[in-house]
Image (cartoon, rainbow, N blue to C red; front, side, top):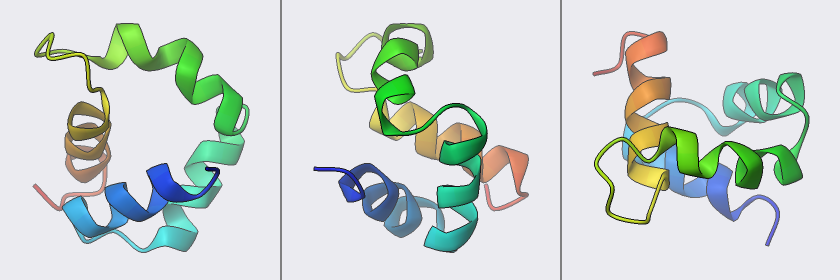
Length: 63
């Protein structure tokens, strides 16, 4: 569901969901996340959410 990714990332990083929504919209919306998934799955576990959350946390100094 749209928004689930944002909620998981917000909970994982402590970054406000509103900020993460802005990031999502800036990169092309929810559908674009699937396109980037394979590139962002840095640990190769098949789940890029933890990697995206870590990346977002690093960008916003929350890591």
